[in-house]
Amino acid sequence: MVKTALFLIIFLTSCSIKTIKLENGMTKVPADKHFFDKYYRERYTTKSFKKIDCNAIYIEAFHSVDIPYKKFFDSRIRNSFIHAIKFYNNGCLNLFNIDTSKIDTQLFNLNPKKNGYRGVSYIKNNESLIDIIVPINDVYSMGKKTYRVKINGDTLVLTDKKNHTRYLYLKKELSKQNLIYKPFW
Figure (spheres, one colour):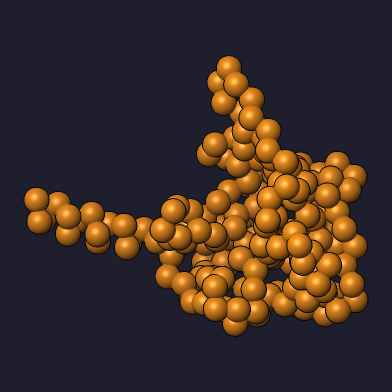
C-alpha cells in the first residue's frame, strides 16, 4: 500500500512540467527556457499561420462540447473570465485570462513577462495545431493542451483534440502598447 502510494506520487510529479511563476504571482510557465525548442522547434515546423493577424488578439466568444447524442453550448461572455490569445510572427503565442469587468484595462497591457500562459503554433501531419502549457486539472498541475486550428476571416476556431470542445474566438485590434512585446520562449 505504501509502495503504491509512493509510486503514484513519483509518477504524478514526474508527469508534470516544472514551472516558475511570472511577475503577477499566479501564472506559471515552463521553467526550462529551452522547453519549446526541445519539444517543438526541433521536431516540427513552428510558425504563425498565414491567416492569423499578429497585430490583434483573439477573444473567446463561446464554446460548445460535442457529447454523443447531446450538444452543449456555453456562452463565455456571461462568465467572469474569458480567454484571449495573442499570436506572434515566430509561432509563439500567449493565452491570457481576462476579467470581463475589466476587459478594456486588461487588454491595454498584455506583457508576456508579467502574465499569460505560453504556447506555440506548429504544423504536424499537415494539420495546423497549437499547444499551450496550462493547468490541466483541479489542483492546477501544469500540462499541455493541444488544439486544432481553423481560421475564417476574423474568426478563430480551436478544437480540443481530447474532448472535442470547440472554442470560438473573435479578432480585436491591439493598442500600439501591446505590439512592442516580443516572445522569448
